[in-house]
Figure 1 (spheres, one colour):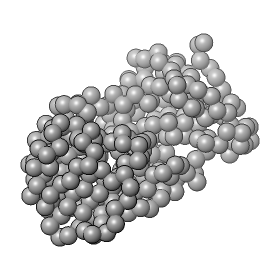
Figure 2 (cartoon, one colour; figure 1 turned 90 degrees about the horizontal axis):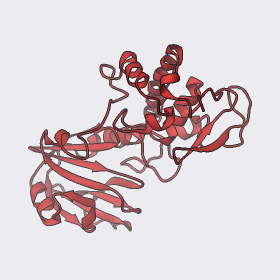
Figure 3 (tube, rainbow, N blue to C red; figure 1 turned 120 degrees about the vertical axis):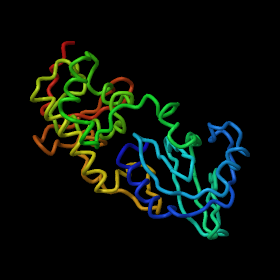
Figure 4 (cartoon, rainbow, N blue to C red; figure 1 turned 90 degrees about the vertical axis):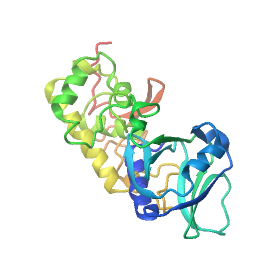
Amino acid sequence: MPELPEVETVVRTLNGLIVGKTIRDVQVRLPRIIQKPDDPPLFAAMLQGRTFERVERRGKFIRMLLDGITLVSHLRMEGRYGLYRTGEPEELHTHVVFRFEDDTELRYKDVRQFGTMHLFVRGEEFEQPPLHKLGMEPLDELVFTYRAFRDLMAKRSTRVKPLLLNQEIIVGLGNIYVDEALHRAGIHPEREADSLKPSELKRLHESIVRVLRDAVDAGGSSVKSYVNGQGEMGYFQYSLRVYGRKGEPCQACGASIVKTVVAGRGTHFCPRCQKDKSRR
């Protein structure tokens, strides 16, 4: 599933592709993608004649702001957007098409068919699912401060990896970047959050921000099928230190990277750099 850096890259790409374009009509080929309203013809009618003003991100969700209305899109596993000239051949699994007045069209393709779209009156999206319970934005310097992070972690005895994956706590982090941040901070993924020392919390906070910023700068990680809105791959996969590197030497100490399962998720770590100090 695309994580914060991949979604942020898609958002930046879409801002350059669709802002200022006015929708002539919308075609929905897979109705279950449209979650709100649960009526595809009404969804299309609500968007007709509206203009994209800007595209933003909230966690792993894309917020497309049009005049008076907001479209919230979640790519899930393999959803992707692309801009095409009207009449260009469509790829398989193209499920939603936004046709513009300038004879271009934004196409949503989703092989796995897990993506979702919700329409809201502007501003109401933050009061209802799927955005209403989302946690702190880790790249917001005013929100994700060390003090806020420290207070959040100190109250919980949950293992640190599943806690960081909880989107109601901190948004945007997924399996790749949690593994990478924990390795850079030297913290075992099964440590209890409330057992972390202030120095460890400081390292972890800094590692989360640094890993995410570096990944955004690299256009995300194309470890499977991810590409941005222009069909371009990300490059952060070449900077991954533990994720997907089972059996390879740790770049910091040379020990073999281990893969295990934590909270049902495949988890990569270095047994030497990230010693297990949990209370188990």
